[in-house]
Every structure is written in structure tokens, then in C-alpha cells.
Image 1 (cartoon, helix red, strand yellow):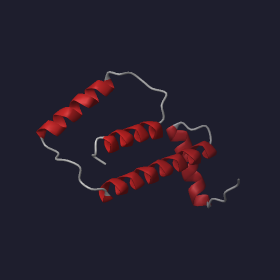
Image 2: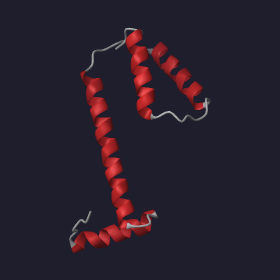
Image 3: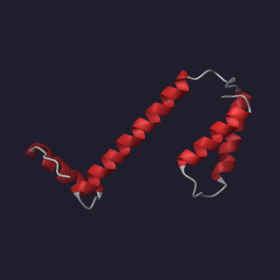
Image 4: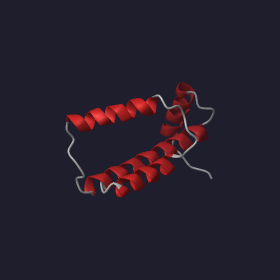
Length: 100
């Protein structure tokens, strides 16, 4: 794939590649596309969440339990599971608990 870029942007791209440590302009552009895709996925998920019904109260007990879950997660190590796999499991659990 070839992309025509105006001269005014060519120097900007070259600067970004040099300053940010990319190996090539193509690598930099691929990273920009990946980031745009991630933003779109996040936006879609946020809009889905905003459109969903309220499932509970965000009180002190809720945040204490959330902190405990975050602490446990931080101490649990790493995983080979994908974000989509994890989200699927979380949604299934919430549905089973009647919170989604």
C-alpha cells in the first residue's frame, strides 16, 4: 500500500520517527492506526456502558470491594488471556449475578 503525503507532513513524520524511536514511517503509521482502533473500541464500550441500566450503588462498600479486587489483581501475576476473553467472562459473571 502506498500513501501520498504532502511535503509539509513528510518532515513531521520523519521527526516523529526519529524522536519516538520508530524504525520507519510505516511503523509509526501502523502504531497510529492501532491507537485509533483502540480508541474506537474504548469509545464503543463506554457508549454501551452509558446506555445500559444502573445495576447498583457506588457507595463506600462498592469502592472498598473494588480496591480489594484491584489489589488481588495486581498481585496475581500475568496472563495469556486476551482482553476480549476476560471481558466475555466478566459479562457472563455479571449476567449470572443479575447485574447485567
